[in-house]
Image 1 (cartoon, one colour):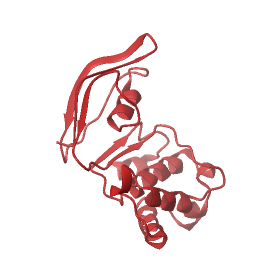
Image 2 (cartoon, helix red, strand yellow):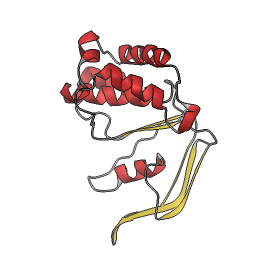
Image 3 (cartoon, one colour):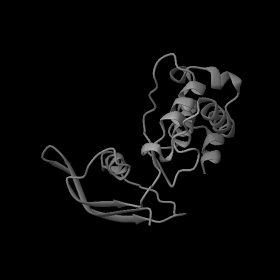
Image 4 (cartoon, helix red, strand yellow):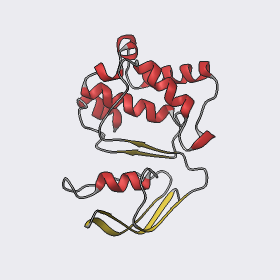
Length: 174
């Protein structure tokens, strides 16, 4: 089992977002969360990714789990190229040193491979992340997520992954 949540709950102030949520995710499984806006899907994903804490319940993950969370909104530092962002993600890693690459050249090579697999050409790779269209920003966020775990996540969580993607991007993602 990669991840297990038992009876987790979360509130914002006095307003409950969700309560008594239990789920488990095993290797190879694909899970989709469907619900109306404001139902707590993003909040739940952030908790599962370890970026937020539940108010109650228990979250258990596999030892050494390389979990990646790609946020709904794509934000990058101004003036930093896609190539530089992916290289920095590879160097930073996620979840500690398990996914980090410590050699700058190796991080650049891996970043280029990931960008290429996501359809980035030289112009998109050299462009600042914030100058990209919505669909290319989403691809860049996915590329950074993949680079943060050496291209091999155990669990890859995407919040609204098809936002701003064209049909080709959605087909690739599927």
